[in-house]
Length: 66
Image (cartoon, rainbow, N blue to C red):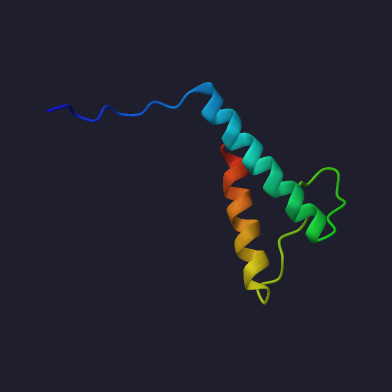
């Protein structure tokens, strides 16, 4: 019986993750008209916008890794 070996992440995997995150950040900026050149996602959205708030939170969490 052959056991599954743990999959190690390669530099290519990390590059792909970074590119995916950068693409999502760009999409967020375009969709919501963010023009701030310092804060990549602009100010946190109001709580009454659940979809945008969740996307902002997910992107903020993802950006912390980099």
